[in-house]
Image: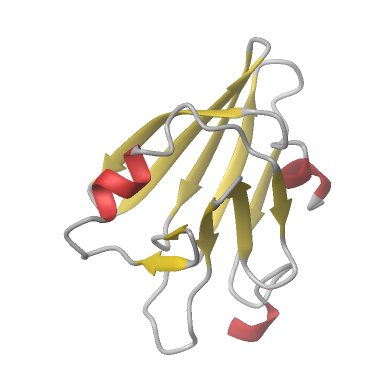
Length: 128
C-alpha cells in the first residue's frame, strides 16, 4: 500500500500543524488534500544536515518547507518525503517510545483512501 505514499509526488506542502503530541502535515495538489499525521516526530534534513524535534531550529526548518513540492517518497525503512535538497524522514529506533501507530496518510475527498503505519508493519519491520 506504499503506492499511496508514492502518490504524494507532485503535491506541495501547504500547512504544518503542531498538535500537542503529534504533527499533521497537509499537502495539496489540483484540489486534492492529503493529511499525514505523524505520532513519531520526523527529522528535517536540509543539505544533508539532520535536525530533530527539540532543536531550536526545528520548527523554522519544518515550516520552511511550506510551498515546496514533493519530488519523491521512499518507504524502504521508515518514510521519507523528499523536497529537492530537503527531506522529512520519519523513523524511530526500538528504544524510542511510540504508541500503536507511527503515522497515517489520508486523502481527503474522492474515495477517502488512507494508510496507517505501525511498529513491525510495512516500512517499520525493524521496530517489531
